[in-house]
Amino acid sequence: MWGESLKNTLPATTEVLDMSAHVRLIKSEGGDGMDAEDHHGGYDPHYWLDIDNMIIMTKVVKEELSRLFPEKAAAFETSAQAYIGRLEKLKSDYHTGLKGCKNRILVSNHRAFGYLAQANGLEAVSVIGLSSDEQPSAKVIGKVIALVKEHGIKTIFFEEFINDNVAQTIARESGARSESLQPLENISEDELKSHQTYESIMRENLAKLTEAMECR
Ligand SMILES: [Zn+2]
Image (cartoon, rainbow, N blue to C red; front, side):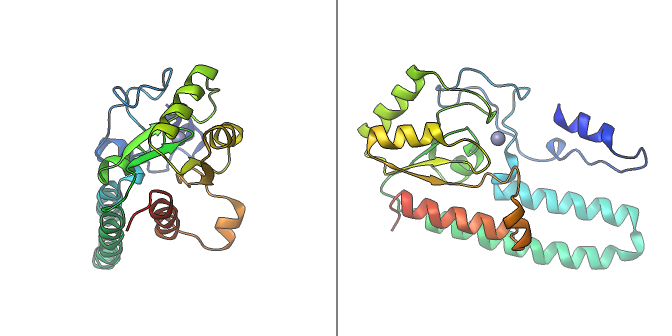
């Protein structure tokens, strides 16, 4: 597990919180059926894209910090409550924004948006599996092109940081356009410099989704 190798690079005194023990996880089996296989130990690792999981993580961090620095517990409580309030608002904006969409199928290159889809009643379809470095077969690409045509899907999403050739090919062959969607696994130099946050990037993603899926 990548978390283990990361842990080994940190000083032994570093406190490590394993969030996957607290959040709600989706099993990686039984997805869209277009992936060959995955290597994530049975669970979809992109759990931060379910805003409810971000709320859980905020509480876990607050409790852990309060345990380590009990004299600051009141301040941690105040900031956690404020942040949870912003996350609740973000969650309700997602629900409202994605309620009346003409198209409810979210097509992306790698399977990163299962949590986001499930939390908002969308269907996520991906070309490759949970790892973003797989190469899809021509057969799978053909299946996705057929699905995009059949459902009149207007936009194919790809992730920043990875080669978007496959998304471009599918878009070209099916008459759709391609657009980036940020799964928040990494953050770019530019995003860091412009002080982008989980919230601002999630709002950017929402704007792209409502446009692509023709939501009223
Ligand atoms: Zn991923």
